[in-house]
Image (cartoon, rainbow, N blue to C red):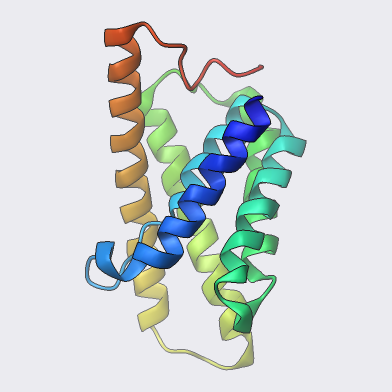
Length: 166
């Protein structure tokens, strides 16, 4: 059951990113919404779950960008796997720690995509600036979302997002 819910979150994030990206963009920066779920899955499960979620979300993102098919799958898999390996050393009960982990992951993801796309030629500084801004924007949206979910969990007594297998 958990995997079905996780897959739905990844699909919803990828569809929202692809369809609403231009509407929610701030100065060209778009939050990488599926990455919020990739990070949560990877640091509450293991490296295999992180790798699969990164690959799955990357596949969905690549379906909306066929010109660079495979870039998001590769970078998403690397980010998810790395977080899955590092999860034993992270204190995920702290919202600030989760925010820093998401910020670093989002920066690696966004800049990794730009590096892959720039392999054909030097794109100039604009894509790197936008990628950096997208990483920051992703971290802010993710922390706000996780804060709201933690708040709702406290109010309604729901099972927490961070109660995954460790």
